[in-house]
Image 1 (cartoon, helix red, strand yellow):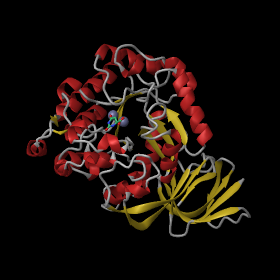
Image 2 (cartoon, protein in one colour; image 1 turned 60 degrees about the vertical axis):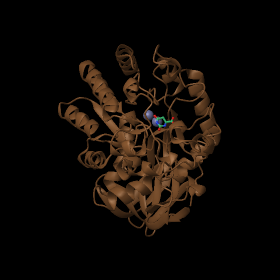
Image 3 (cartoon, helix red, strand yellow; image 1 turned 90 degrees about the horizontal axis):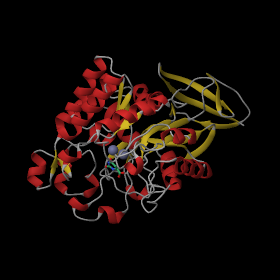
Length: 421
Ligand code: DOR
Ligand code: ZN
Ligand code: ZN
Protein backbone atom coordinates (compact mmCIF):
# COMPACT_ATOMS: atom_id res chain seq x y z
CA UNK A 1 0.00 0.00 0.00
CA UNK A 2 1.20 3.46 -0.89
CA UNK A 3 0.28 6.72 0.81
CA UNK A 4 1.24 10.16 -0.49
CA UNK A 5 1.47 13.25 1.71
CA UNK A 6 1.31 16.28 -0.56
CA UNK A 7 2.16 19.97 -0.16
CA UNK A 8 3.28 19.84 3.47
CA UNK A 9 6.36 21.30 5.11
CA UNK A 10 8.67 18.41 5.99
CA UNK A 11 10.52 18.95 9.27
CA UNK A 12 13.92 17.27 9.35
CA UNK A 13 17.00 17.62 11.53
CA UNK A 14 18.47 19.97 8.95
CA UNK A 15 15.42 22.19 8.86
CA UNK A 16 12.15 22.58 7.01
CA UNK A 17 11.59 21.77 3.36
CA UNK A 18 8.48 22.11 1.23
CA UNK A 19 8.06 18.72 -0.38
CA UNK A 20 5.84 15.70 -0.86
CA UNK A 21 6.45 12.45 0.98
CA UNK A 22 5.62 9.05 -0.46
CA UNK A 23 5.15 6.03 1.78
CA UNK A 24 5.44 2.54 0.34
CA UNK A 25 4.40 -0.17 2.79
CA UNK A 26 5.97 0.56 6.17
CA UNK A 27 8.70 2.86 4.89
CA UNK A 28 9.31 6.29 3.49
CA UNK A 29 9.97 5.72 -0.21
CA UNK A 30 10.63 9.24 -1.43
CA UNK A 31 10.79 12.84 -0.30
CA UNK A 32 10.76 15.29 -3.22
CA UNK A 33 8.79 18.16 -4.72
CA UNK A 34 5.80 17.33 -6.93
CA UNK A 35 5.59 13.56 -6.51
CA UNK A 36 2.79 12.19 -8.70
CA UNK A 37 1.41 8.79 -7.70
CA UNK A 38 -1.99 7.27 -8.16
CA UNK A 39 -2.63 6.24 -4.55
CA UNK A 40 -4.34 7.40 -1.36
CA UNK A 41 -3.29 11.02 -0.79
CA UNK A 42 -3.33 13.34 2.19
CA UNK A 43 -3.41 17.04 1.36
CA UNK A 44 -1.05 18.59 3.91
CA UNK A 45 -1.25 22.15 2.53
CA UNK A 46 -0.53 24.59 5.32
CA UNK A 47 0.53 21.76 7.63
CA UNK A 48 3.83 20.43 8.95
CA UNK A 49 4.99 16.84 8.61
CA UNK A 50 7.13 15.58 11.50
CA UNK A 51 8.75 12.33 12.58
CA UNK A 52 6.20 10.55 14.79
CA UNK A 53 6.55 11.56 18.42
CA UNK A 54 8.08 9.04 20.80
CA UNK A 55 7.18 9.22 24.48
CA UNK A 56 9.72 7.26 26.46
CA UNK A 57 7.85 7.79 29.75
CA UNK A 58 4.16 6.98 30.11
CA UNK A 59 1.97 5.05 32.53
CA UNK A 60 -0.65 2.91 30.78
CA UNK A 61 -1.80 1.25 34.05
CA UNK A 62 -2.57 -2.16 32.57
CA UNK A 63 -2.44 -4.69 34.12
CA UNK A 64 -4.09 -3.86 37.40
CA UNK A 65 -5.28 -0.27 37.33
CA UNK A 66 -7.56 -0.33 34.29
CA UNK A 67 -9.95 2.10 35.99
CA UNK A 68 -7.28 4.78 35.49
CA UNK A 69 -6.22 3.76 31.96
CA UNK A 70 -5.67 0.64 29.91
CA UNK A 71 -3.55 -0.19 26.91
CA UNK A 72 -6.46 0.51 24.55
CA UNK A 73 -7.46 3.90 25.97
CA UNK A 74 -3.81 4.83 26.46
CA UNK A 75 -3.00 3.92 22.85
CA UNK A 76 -5.98 5.93 21.56
CA UNK A 77 -4.84 8.91 23.62
CA UNK A 78 -1.26 8.45 22.41
CA UNK A 79 -2.07 8.58 18.70
CA UNK A 80 -4.43 11.52 19.33
CA UNK A 81 -1.42 13.25 20.89
CA UNK A 82 0.68 12.49 17.80
CA UNK A 83 2.67 9.67 19.39
CA UNK A 84 3.67 6.73 17.23
CA UNK A 85 5.66 4.97 19.97
CA UNK A 86 5.32 5.00 23.75
CA UNK A 87 7.29 3.26 26.50
CA UNK A 88 5.24 2.27 29.52
CA UNK A 89 6.51 2.25 33.06
CA UNK A 90 6.32 -0.96 35.09
CA UNK A 91 4.43 0.28 38.18
CA UNK A 92 1.38 -1.81 37.30
CA UNK A 93 -0.23 -4.58 39.34
CA UNK A 94 1.45 -7.00 39.07
CA UNK A 95 4.59 -4.97 38.51
CA UNK A 96 6.29 -5.63 35.16
CA UNK A 97 9.21 -7.42 36.79
CA UNK A 98 9.07 -10.60 34.71
CA UNK A 99 8.74 -11.77 31.11
CA UNK A 100 5.08 -12.79 31.49
CA UNK A 101 3.86 -9.27 32.23
CA UNK A 102 6.11 -7.76 29.54
CA UNK A 103 4.78 -10.29 27.02
CA UNK A 104 1.20 -9.58 28.07
CA UNK A 105 1.65 -5.83 27.49
CA UNK A 106 3.09 -6.42 24.04
CA UNK A 107 0.24 -8.79 23.14
CA UNK A 108 -2.42 -6.33 24.26
CA UNK A 109 -0.71 -3.53 22.34
CA UNK A 110 -0.61 -5.73 19.22
CA UNK A 111 -4.34 -6.46 19.57
CA UNK A 112 -5.12 -2.77 19.99
CA UNK A 113 -2.82 -2.07 17.01
CA UNK A 114 -2.57 1.74 17.22
CA UNK A 115 0.84 2.99 18.37
CA UNK A 116 3.90 0.89 19.17
CA UNK A 117 3.98 0.15 22.90
CA UNK A 118 7.31 -0.80 24.44
CA UNK A 119 7.28 -2.15 27.98
CA UNK A 120 9.86 -0.96 30.50
CA UNK A 121 10.77 -3.61 33.07
CA UNK A 122 11.23 -2.85 36.73
CA UNK A 123 14.72 -2.73 38.20
CA UNK A 124 13.74 -4.63 41.33
CA UNK A 125 11.11 -7.27 42.00
CA UNK A 126 7.81 -5.61 42.83
CA UNK A 127 9.67 -2.26 42.75
CA UNK A 128 10.56 -3.14 46.32
CA UNK A 129 14.21 -2.11 45.97
CA UNK A 130 15.50 -5.40 47.34
CA UNK A 131 16.33 -7.91 44.63
CA UNK A 132 16.78 -7.57 40.90
CA UNK A 133 13.95 -8.39 38.51
CA UNK A 134 14.26 -10.98 35.71
CA UNK A 135 16.08 -8.44 33.55
CA UNK A 136 17.52 -10.86 30.99
CA UNK A 137 14.25 -12.71 30.45
CA UNK A 138 12.37 -9.41 30.18
CA UNK A 139 14.87 -8.26 27.57
CA UNK A 140 14.06 -11.38 25.53
CA UNK A 141 10.36 -10.52 25.96
CA UNK A 142 10.95 -7.05 24.48
CA UNK A 143 11.54 -4.51 27.25
CA UNK A 144 13.47 -1.44 26.09
CA UNK A 145 14.81 -0.22 29.47
CA UNK A 146 14.46 -0.75 33.21
CA UNK A 147 13.12 1.61 35.87
CA UNK A 148 11.54 1.54 39.32
CA UNK A 149 9.65 4.71 38.35
CA UNK A 150 7.50 6.08 41.13
CA UNK A 151 10.50 5.74 43.41
CA UNK A 152 14.27 5.45 43.47
CA UNK A 153 16.23 2.32 44.22
CA UNK A 154 17.41 3.52 47.63
CA UNK A 155 20.19 0.96 48.08
CA UNK A 156 23.17 2.17 46.03
CA UNK A 157 24.76 -1.29 45.82
CA UNK A 158 21.58 -2.72 44.30
CA UNK A 159 21.49 0.21 41.89
CA UNK A 160 25.09 -0.47 40.94
CA UNK A 161 24.37 -4.13 40.25
CA UNK A 162 21.26 -3.19 38.26
CA UNK A 163 23.23 -0.79 36.08
CA UNK A 164 25.97 -3.35 35.42
CA UNK A 165 23.55 -6.19 34.78
CA UNK A 166 21.26 -4.11 32.55
CA UNK A 167 24.26 -2.81 30.62
CA UNK A 168 25.29 -6.39 29.82
CA UNK A 169 21.91 -6.73 28.09
CA UNK A 170 22.22 -3.36 26.33
CA UNK A 171 19.55 -1.80 28.53
CA UNK A 172 19.64 1.55 30.33
CA UNK A 173 18.31 2.43 33.76
CA UNK A 174 15.76 5.25 33.68
CA UNK A 175 16.12 6.87 37.07
CA UNK A 176 13.23 8.40 39.00
CA UNK A 177 15.32 10.48 41.37
CA UNK A 178 13.89 10.88 44.86
CA UNK A 179 15.40 10.38 48.30
CA UNK A 180 12.18 9.19 49.92
CA UNK A 181 13.39 9.74 53.48
CA UNK A 182 14.04 13.36 52.63
CA UNK A 183 10.81 13.75 50.65
CA UNK A 184 9.18 12.47 53.85
CA UNK A 185 5.59 12.43 52.61
CA UNK A 186 5.73 15.92 51.09
CA UNK A 187 3.22 16.77 48.38
CA UNK A 188 4.47 20.02 46.76
CA UNK A 189 7.73 21.90 46.26
CA UNK A 190 9.19 23.18 49.54
CA UNK A 191 9.28 26.96 49.37
CA UNK A 192 7.19 30.08 49.79
CA UNK A 193 4.03 28.49 48.39
CA UNK A 194 4.23 25.40 50.58
CA UNK A 195 4.44 27.73 53.58
CA UNK A 196 1.53 29.86 52.40
CA UNK A 197 -0.71 26.88 51.64
CA UNK A 198 0.33 24.79 54.62
CA UNK A 199 1.05 21.90 52.27
CA UNK A 200 4.08 19.78 53.15
CA UNK A 201 7.05 20.54 50.95
CA UNK A 202 9.62 18.40 49.14
CA UNK A 203 13.13 19.88 48.99
CA UNK A 204 14.96 20.08 45.71
CA UNK A 205 17.70 18.15 47.48
CA UNK A 206 15.45 15.08 47.57
CA UNK A 207 15.70 14.96 43.78
CA UNK A 208 19.23 16.33 43.41
CA UNK A 209 20.84 13.83 45.78
CA UNK A 210 19.60 10.93 43.69
CA UNK A 211 20.50 12.62 40.40
CA UNK A 212 24.02 13.07 41.77
CA UNK A 213 24.14 9.49 43.07
CA UNK A 214 23.04 7.95 39.80
CA UNK A 215 25.46 10.10 37.85
CA UNK A 216 28.25 9.13 40.26
CA UNK A 217 27.49 5.46 39.62
CA UNK A 218 27.37 6.05 35.88
CA UNK A 219 30.69 7.88 35.97
CA UNK A 220 32.47 5.37 38.19
CA UNK A 221 31.20 2.38 36.22
CA UNK A 222 31.35 4.07 32.80
CA UNK A 223 27.80 2.91 32.11
CA UNK A 224 25.18 5.17 30.51
CA UNK A 225 22.28 6.35 32.63
CA UNK A 226 19.11 8.34 31.95
CA UNK A 227 17.58 10.80 34.43
CA UNK A 228 13.76 11.00 34.44
CA UNK A 229 11.56 14.10 34.72
CA UNK A 230 14.11 16.72 35.84
CA UNK A 231 12.34 19.50 37.77
CA UNK A 232 15.05 21.45 39.63
CA UNK A 233 17.48 24.15 38.49
CA UNK A 234 20.14 22.45 40.59
CA UNK A 235 19.46 19.09 38.93
CA UNK A 236 19.99 20.71 35.53
CA UNK A 237 23.35 22.04 36.80
CA UNK A 238 24.45 18.60 38.03
CA UNK A 239 23.61 17.02 34.67
CA UNK A 240 25.25 19.84 32.73
CA UNK A 241 28.55 19.55 34.55
CA UNK A 242 28.49 15.74 34.27
CA UNK A 243 27.96 16.00 30.53
CA UNK A 244 30.83 18.49 30.31
CA UNK A 245 33.08 15.84 31.93
CA UNK A 246 31.96 13.29 29.38
CA UNK A 247 29.68 11.25 31.62
CA UNK A 248 27.23 9.19 29.55
CA UNK A 249 24.14 10.78 31.03
CA UNK A 250 20.95 11.73 29.20
CA UNK A 251 17.92 13.43 30.70
CA UNK A 252 14.28 14.25 30.14
CA UNK A 253 11.79 16.80 31.38
CA UNK A 254 8.02 17.27 30.96
CA UNK A 255 5.81 20.15 29.79
CA UNK A 256 4.53 20.86 33.32
CA UNK A 257 8.07 21.73 34.42
CA UNK A 258 8.62 24.32 31.68
CA UNK A 259 5.09 25.75 31.58
CA UNK A 260 4.07 25.94 35.25
CA UNK A 261 5.42 27.20 38.55
CA UNK A 262 4.22 26.21 41.99
CA UNK A 263 2.07 29.35 42.13
CA UNK A 264 -0.65 27.05 40.77
CA UNK A 265 -0.79 25.00 43.99
CA UNK A 266 -2.37 27.92 45.81
CA UNK A 267 -5.67 26.83 44.21
CA UNK A 268 -5.33 23.47 46.02
CA UNK A 269 -6.36 21.87 42.72
CA UNK A 270 -5.16 18.26 43.07
CA UNK A 271 -4.53 18.13 39.31
CA UNK A 272 -1.41 20.17 40.07
CA UNK A 273 -0.06 17.39 42.31
CA UNK A 274 2.76 15.56 40.58
CA UNK A 275 5.99 13.88 41.58
CA UNK A 276 8.50 15.45 41.35
CA UNK A 277 6.52 18.59 42.14
CA UNK A 278 6.23 21.64 39.94
CA UNK A 279 8.82 24.07 41.32
CA UNK A 280 9.66 27.79 41.15
CA UNK A 281 10.41 30.38 38.49
CA UNK A 282 14.17 29.85 38.62
CA UNK A 283 13.66 26.12 38.11
CA UNK A 284 11.34 26.69 35.16
CA UNK A 285 13.87 29.07 33.61
CA UNK A 286 16.71 26.57 34.07
CA UNK A 287 14.64 23.75 32.56
CA UNK A 288 13.94 25.91 29.51
CA UNK A 289 17.64 26.85 29.26
CA UNK A 290 18.58 23.17 29.71
CA UNK A 291 16.36 22.23 26.78
CA UNK A 292 17.91 25.00 24.70
CA UNK A 293 21.53 24.18 25.46
CA UNK A 294 21.10 20.40 25.16
CA UNK A 295 21.50 19.48 28.84
CA UNK A 296 17.97 18.07 28.65
CA UNK A 297 17.75 15.70 25.69
CA UNK A 298 14.13 14.63 25.64
CA UNK A 299 10.63 15.90 26.32
CA UNK A 300 8.41 13.18 27.77
CA UNK A 301 4.94 13.42 29.27
CA UNK A 302 5.15 11.18 32.36
CA UNK A 303 1.50 10.61 31.34
CA UNK A 304 0.05 9.54 34.69
CA UNK A 305 -3.70 9.09 34.31
CA UNK A 306 -5.76 8.79 37.48
CA UNK A 307 -9.47 8.32 38.09
CA UNK A 308 -11.64 11.09 39.52
CA UNK A 309 -11.83 9.39 42.90
CA UNK A 310 -8.03 9.41 43.15
CA UNK A 311 -7.99 13.18 42.64
CA UNK A 312 -11.26 14.39 44.20
CA UNK A 313 -9.90 14.16 47.73
CA UNK A 314 -7.92 16.57 49.87
CA UNK A 315 -4.53 17.56 48.49
CA UNK A 316 -2.52 15.45 50.90
CA UNK A 317 -4.41 12.29 49.96
CA UNK A 318 -4.61 12.79 46.19
CA UNK A 319 -2.58 10.65 43.79
CA UNK A 320 0.50 12.18 42.16
CA UNK A 321 0.34 12.58 38.39
CA UNK A 322 -0.77 14.50 35.31
CA UNK A 323 -2.55 13.07 32.27
CA UNK A 324 -0.26 14.58 29.66
CA UNK A 325 -0.14 12.69 26.41
CA UNK A 326 -2.83 14.70 24.63
CA UNK A 327 -1.45 18.12 25.54
CA UNK A 328 2.30 17.59 25.17
CA UNK A 329 2.87 18.75 21.61
CA UNK A 330 0.64 21.83 21.79
CA UNK A 331 2.13 22.93 25.13
CA UNK A 332 5.67 22.33 23.89
CA UNK A 333 5.03 24.13 20.62
CA UNK A 334 3.27 27.06 22.30
CA UNK A 335 5.73 27.52 25.17
CA UNK A 336 9.01 26.58 23.47
CA UNK A 337 8.73 27.24 19.73
CA UNK A 338 6.35 30.19 19.60
CA UNK A 339 8.43 31.85 22.29
CA UNK A 340 11.62 31.36 20.26
CA UNK A 341 13.40 28.99 22.68
CA UNK A 342 13.59 26.11 20.18
CA UNK A 343 13.05 25.79 16.45
CA UNK A 344 10.38 23.36 15.32
CA UNK A 345 13.14 21.06 14.14
CA UNK A 346 14.75 21.16 17.61
CA UNK A 347 11.40 20.42 19.26
CA UNK A 348 10.94 17.49 16.91
CA UNK A 349 14.34 16.20 17.99
CA UNK A 350 13.40 16.40 21.71
CA UNK A 351 10.12 14.60 21.09
CA UNK A 352 11.28 12.00 18.63
CA UNK A 353 14.89 11.51 17.54
CA UNK A 354 16.48 11.90 20.99
CA UNK A 355 14.21 9.39 22.76
CA UNK A 356 14.79 6.97 19.85
CA UNK A 357 18.56 7.39 20.31
CA UNK A 358 18.45 7.04 24.11
CA UNK A 359 16.58 3.73 23.86
CA UNK A 360 17.88 2.47 20.51
CA UNK A 361 14.45 2.52 18.88
CA UNK A 362 13.68 2.93 15.19
CA UNK A 363 12.04 6.16 14.07
CA UNK A 364 12.74 9.79 14.76
CA UNK A 365 13.83 10.59 11.21
CA UNK A 366 12.03 11.67 8.08
CA UNK A 367 14.38 10.25 5.47
CA UNK A 368 14.00 7.92 2.53
CA UNK A 369 14.20 4.32 3.71
CA UNK A 370 13.24 5.14 7.30
CA UNK A 371 10.13 3.72 8.97
CA UNK A 372 6.96 5.67 8.10
CA UNK A 373 6.07 6.80 11.62
CA UNK A 374 4.79 10.30 10.94
CA UNK A 375 2.77 13.04 12.63
CA UNK A 376 1.08 15.83 10.67
CA UNK A 377 0.24 18.99 12.61
CA UNK A 378 -1.49 22.29 12.00
CA UNK A 379 0.53 24.93 13.83
CA UNK A 380 -1.97 27.71 13.23
CA UNK A 381 -4.84 25.87 14.85
CA UNK A 382 -5.47 27.65 18.15
CA UNK A 383 -7.68 25.93 20.70
CA UNK A 384 -8.47 25.73 24.38
CA UNK A 385 -7.48 22.58 26.26
CA UNK A 386 -10.55 20.71 27.49
CA UNK A 387 -9.95 17.47 29.38
CA UNK A 388 -13.52 16.37 28.70
CA UNK A 389 -12.36 15.76 25.13
CA UNK A 390 -9.41 13.56 26.16
CA UNK A 391 -9.47 10.00 24.87
CA UNK A 392 -7.43 9.02 27.92
CA UNK A 393 -9.47 7.83 30.87
CA UNK A 394 -7.36 10.24 32.95
CA UNK A 395 -8.87 13.71 32.84
CA UNK A 396 -6.38 14.94 35.45
CA UNK A 397 -4.71 17.97 33.90
CA UNK A 398 -3.81 21.34 35.38
CA UNK A 399 -3.99 22.79 31.83
CA UNK A 400 -7.76 22.98 31.37
CA UNK A 401 -8.61 26.33 29.82
CA UNK A 402 -5.08 26.97 28.49
CA UNK A 403 -5.09 28.44 25.01
CA UNK A 404 -2.56 26.62 22.84
CA UNK A 405 -1.41 26.33 19.24
CA UNK A 406 -0.65 23.16 17.36
CA UNK A 407 -3.19 20.55 16.54
CA UNK A 408 -2.37 16.96 15.64
CA UNK A 409 -4.14 16.21 12.33
CA UNK A 410 -2.83 12.76 11.42
CA UNK A 411 -0.77 10.09 13.16
CA UNK A 412 0.71 7.47 10.86
CA UNK A 413 2.34 4.31 12.22
CA UNK A 414 4.23 1.90 9.95
CA UNK A 415 2.67 3.64 6.97
CA UNK A 416 -0.92 3.28 8.20
CA UNK A 417 -3.15 6.16 9.37
CA UNK A 418 -3.95 5.44 13.03
CA UNK A 419 -5.46 8.81 13.93
CA UNK A 420 -7.20 11.52 11.96
CA UNK A 421 -8.58 14.60 13.70
O1 DOR B 1 3.44 12.01 39.46
C1 DOR B 1 3.82 10.85 39.29
N1 DOR B 1 2.96 9.87 38.96
N2 DOR B 1 5.11 10.56 39.48
C2 DOR B 1 5.56 9.29 39.47
O2 DOR B 1 6.73 9.11 39.64
C3 DOR B 1 4.63 8.16 39.31
C4 DOR B 1 3.43 8.57 38.58
C5 DOR B 1 2.30 7.58 38.67
O3 DOR B 1 2.52 6.38 38.46
O4 DOR B 1 1.15 8.01 38.89
ZN1 ZN C 1 8.77 9.13 38.19
ZN1 ZN D 1 6.49 8.26 35.68
